Image 1 (cartoon, rainbow, N blue to C red):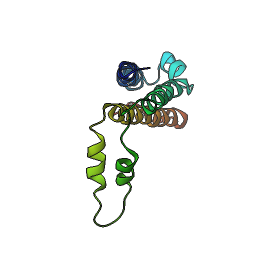
Image 2 (image 1 turned 90 degrees about the horizontal axis):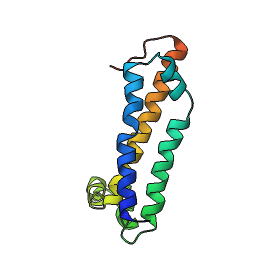
Image 3 (image 1 turned 60 degrees about the vertical axis):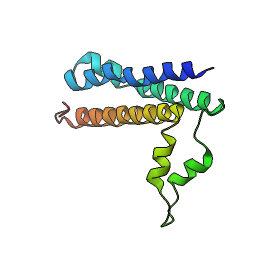
Image 4 (image 1 turned 180 degrees about the vertical axis):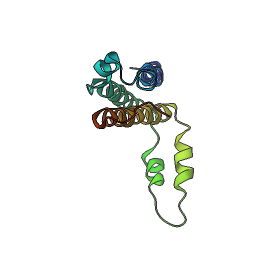
Length: 128
């Protein structure tokens, strides 16, 4: 598998959730929205895209940020620069792809949870 496969997964991770968000925002109580979003499968599908990106990236030379740089993000020493370490890792396209897919999958997970909770409680669920 190649960087092109990771790029394709980036597009899936970016554009795939958009129709699901449209259902949640525009038609939150529609039967079709419930049929699509009540099961956990949409979240699982995008989690698998994320896992694919991680596995393919880890198997490529230069596909991931060096571990030392990654460890710098969690360095709590007063002289450390965790933000700088995170910004440095953004030089790696596969890292950006992994982080982006992670953020979008998590956002969809949380949005679905809020939507389902609102339905269960009988409160408005239209996103604001």
